[in-house]
Length: 423
Image (tube, rainbow, N blue to C red; front, side, top):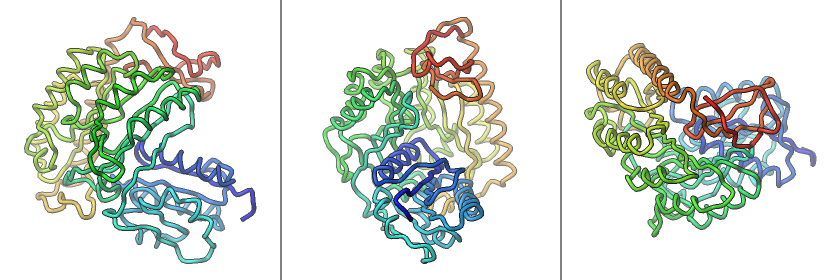
């Protein structure tokens, strides 16, 4: 490869992955690489994978085949959760040159420098128990909004989840360093920061996973004082870690937006028990009740899984009825998929795929109706919209404080600005 090496990235999965991909990109650009779009020809293709569902695994394999057809002489590097969980499986995919596990992905420049085309795929990984340390990351594709990673890993052991096996124990940045990064992002013109992590509310454990005298509420209070950042959003937080004091603080903050995303997974206590979740539906309802009491205009998103093993028609009806009655704004519906080495594989009976898909469709329809109702409540109101700079076929997009998406003809003077908008 010559001095003008090129690299292209593709990210699968969550906001945390996007923040890490952006950091990997900056690392390679600092090493002399020129970034290209994934659809273009490049010397190196990096796929940052997810492994929450079987579809994410399949999409990774599909992307590798596409690269092979388009650029058979290029190097293909796979990292992320799938790479940590199944490195040998990935290494066996024709065209893959390098597999980087959780401990090695941020050493990507060094590893790429050692590659030679035609060699067998190299695996650079270790047992997840040996993964320690915290690497700060943030996305910077559009200076309007940045995903800022403040926490990684998870100490929970939900019976359906592979993330603790893919990312290791819970560990986090320090409040002082996060504040420093927020101050720099403000100087760079960023207006909105989305706080991201695997188990964000568990913030406070050090880089080695051991506790320190910090917590998520302390982080929120410190960030609220940073000048220049107009908006913060909390990407996702477990209901048992979303304390009343956090909700009350957000309700009285000008910078933390009235918008929460709170995983539920099931509205049936029986299924929550099988899932090994750390709360019951009554606690979840209490959290929503307080949010809506203090912020009636607040948007609340919900993660829910359908077709979990043992979920009967009655259990699903419980979930539907619970969500139908709950004052939430939208749902992210996931169809349960079997993951290797999870406790859920031992739970019977297994729900047939066609029933899982039917339940998914039912809840997606409910989500559509929820969002329509939530949006209709603000007709005629004026709310602040932060517009993004992207010009998409003559149109631009932005979000209100409570996460309603607004699309309008592109106006350059509105890019990265807060604009009063009548709904």
